[in-house]
Image (cartoon, helix red, strand yellow):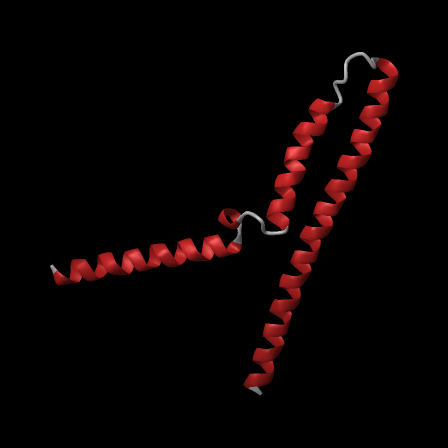
Length: 107
C-alpha cells in the first residue's frame, strides 16, 4: 500500500512540475506574441506620423532585451538563474557549513 501511495505522490509531483513548465512556456509565447503585435503597431504609427525619424527602434530594442532574457530563463539557457544553479549553491553552502562544524568540533 505504501508503494502505491509513493508512486501516486511522485506522479502528482511530476504532473505539477510539468504543468508549471508548460505555464512558463505559454507565458513566454504570450509575451512574444504581444511583443511582435505591439511593435508592428508602433512601426506603422511611426511610419505614418514621422517617417523621417524612426523612433520605433527604441521600444523594439528595450522590450526585445526583455523577451530575450525571458526566453533564456524559460528555456534554461541561463544556468546561473536556473534550478540547477540553486541546487548546486545550496549543496555548496551545506558542505561548507559541515566542514566548519567539523573544524569547530576538533578544536
